[in-house]
Length: 238
Image (cartoon, rainbow, N blue to C red; front, top):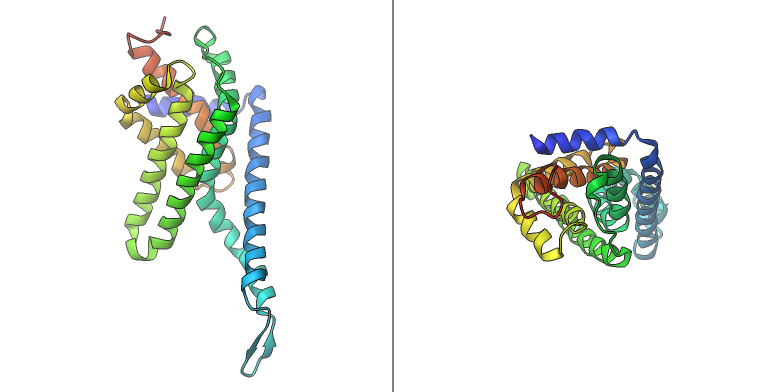
């Protein structure tokens, strides 16, 4: 299956020295977002929660301090939910760098055009916000939806992430309209790859590598299936 082959190639690429710098930057970005989130939660609690509360038999309890320190316990859960939005943001910020290096290694005769960082960042931020709202909604609704919440979480994020990552890979070779049309024609493969990425993003420790690996995988997916099978491609497989 071409999706699995793309993922295996991307995983092996993570061991290449030329990508270690990007993996390190992705790690720093992830930690920065998580720290910023935790700081925001702590500040919100201190601003809006009561500082002290009089309780029977216990007297005055510093509720604000207890809640702010207790919020640290939520960090692992929030980290799992936030990795999908972080991946979307990473796609906008660094997808061109990853794709360029992958193509230089595997497809030197079919390298794509460099894309505008500003446009990619704007797209990444917009998709990040959509993924964030969707992920938080699934988290809040999980007691009501039950097991369906997990299916919706992975399926919805898989569709959103697949759409963004594949578009970023394809637009290096095709105009945006043609890239979108190609993505729609490959919607099954794109969504399947995106869902696998969404699953990997919830695996602790490994999920730190996933944003880089995802962009590498979708670059491979484009070249293995789109460029190889589409006779109209400007980069036909030789």
